[in-house]
Image 1 (cartoon, rainbow, N blue to C red):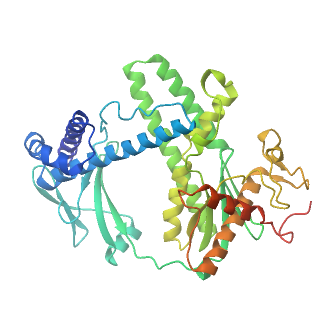
Image 2 (cartoon, rainbow, N blue to C red):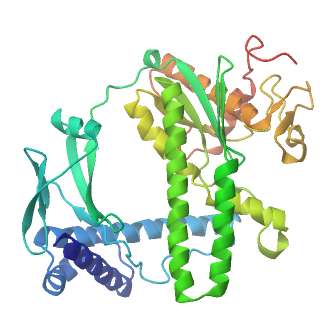
Image 3 (cartoon, rainbow, N blue to C red):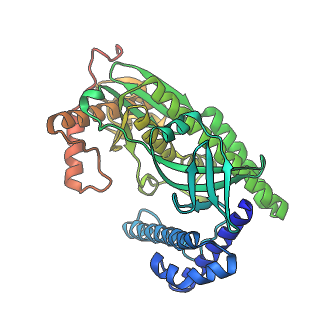
Length: 416
């Protein structure tokens, strides 16, 4: 019954998606609900509340696509990219049969670890098992949100993924005294630096070798082009996705376990792929194409999102800082130049004071210094304001000028 409901829900999503595409690619959820509600209920046997959730989900998908299309148009106008966004050329197709439930209407939790869940045929009351820590949150009164029904075909097991909202006390500067700067990259997925000269390196050599192996397999299968090769490509793609997911989870968990109750600074890498100019296609050498693949396929934003929510649960706090010149500026004397990174390698050599150190560690130290500046402003004003997502040029220039005046303390720096 659950599987039948999942498949019917997916078919209804594709039906509403095609309708929205045929009527101006609309993202208006109310209009979609008004014009497709009865068709969804009669054709797919969807209960009333689910029939209301489907147009909302489709409308949110189209709204996200329109947002990406506008950002792409702006990036093309500014000359950041020449590629045209093609996400609205065809109606979005929903492949995963994941089903969305509304708490209190489609599902509810009962005593004795039982759940009442709605299907296309009727309600089911089933026992469930969960992670002990999460089940304990339910016992202490965590706010329960929407749920998603997901099916693991290999184990033939259903998972109800429930969003929980836990009350966390407001952070204060006094409760976050340890400053941590994290620099992300390809050779080292994360480089951590603290103001007391502590460092941590998380190498990406092993996972990058596996990702390269998967890329070679994908290329061969794509050239073959058979249906069996396509099925195999999907399996390999899912395996690569799980590899990245597990690696980012492991790194974020280890960082927060070794730096509890910290004030963590991360680079604001929004739009970094559009801002960096690289050679692509036939203009790029084989080495450049490999570097482009490494830079474009690793999920750095995912690592940041994991650090964000895990930090809150661990009593820490993450903020974004400007990423400009973090790997080119010398934290010892403040001199900034591309020449400080000879051949863009892993060795940083300041052309002014000849300060020499690992390039990724230089970036992490600069980030930790900028994070310290944000915390000082927080203590002075009582308001926490990291680098906002959208800033004007003058405000950003003022921040960068202030960052240029920061210096790494000689007492904690290694001898030259």
